[in-house]
Amino acid sequence: MSGILAFSLTAGLLFALGLYGMLTRTGLIHRLLGANIMAAAVFLFLVVLSTRATEAGADPVPEVMVLTGIVISISLTAFGLVLIRYLRAMTGQATLPRSGREGDGHSGDD
Amino acid sequence: MSLLSLIFDALLGLGLLWLAWRAVSSPGLFASVVLFMVFGFVMAITWARLGAPDLALAEAAISAGLTGALLLSACKAALTDTGNDNELPDEPSTVRRRWPAALICTGLGAVLSIVMIQVAANRAAVPPALAEAVTTHPLDNPITVMLLDLRGYDTLLEVTVLLTAFLGVRILLEQTELPRLHAPRATTPLMVDPLLAMATPVLLMTALYLFWTGMEAPGGAFQAGALLGALGVMYTLTGRFEPLDRTPVLLRLGLILGPGMFAIFACLALTWSEWPLAYPAGATGAAAVAIEFTLMISIAVTLTLLFSATPGLHARHMGVRHP
Image (tube, rainbow over all chains, first blue to last red; front, side, top):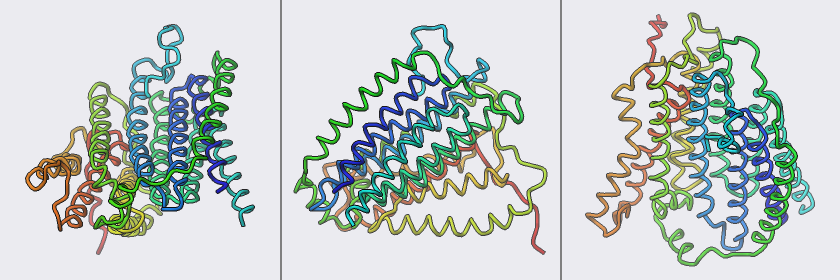
């Protein structure tokens, strides 16, 4: 099964790309996209784990965890987006302040 | 054949990586959002390729569809909240720490990929007890069996998270006056009525079909609820649902129906079994259909309200159109 190799590799690299987005972007919506891409990478790896048990059919447990995760992701995204609007209403911008060093690297919405 | 599937898998993987890279690196907000939506659809194809049609349906409806709608509406919010009418302000494209971040992420990506390939290369069989529980279960779709019965706790907590997200949004909306995103227009464009007249029955039928067929085939409460939520999004966007400052009683009931009924069922199960969430012998199918139906309603109501980002909605009276 060729897919297992290709998609495990994709999952690992996707996770790194999502993290890169979260670390380097200042725009909070971009960071939220990065977090969603990292989640997608984890989902992809879980499904690869579920399909490798091919002889007796796929393992339903990881698949169900992914289905749960997809719904949690949209809850998180929806709440995060309203938090970002709230921040913009309070401070006039949708980025974190540059000054506070303690805020570095945390997007505040994950 | 195997060469073809190898090429197809490689293209899917490269497509995912390229779209993700463009989504996190594009300077413009709108471009990133659209690329992310396309990423969601390619992900849905990947699920189908990996033999997980339940996930493909959920990904297409929830991740690509509704998350995309939420993100586009966030783009609109970036315009209306700043009082800027036509130009999306580009976020500063990159910040400090670009090279250290690239170094860390490259290392992490390499290590993760190697570990994942090694883990995934080991064949693992489904545990026999699990395989037996799934095959002897009265419901036929293994995913529905897991969601509603074997891992019912997960599902109960998952719909609670969805409800909590809405409660959080509602609390934030109380804190500040955010401009309305989807204000009703004075006139509706010509094609809106015919579009809704066609889309409403099709979406309703598809959602009910997915709900009903979820017992034995791919589908279920989440996919059906997401489709109904998409219908709610269309009605919100076209002004058929008007924003309210309070949550009407009927919507409150809709929000709480799924998690509430599921929680009551969990307690009631203690009267016929020693475990919460156990199904009564002989009535598993009926109980599962009832729970799925209430979950579908709650998911649809919650997703629509999360999209509209208002405490409540009500149907607008469109006046008498028909002679």
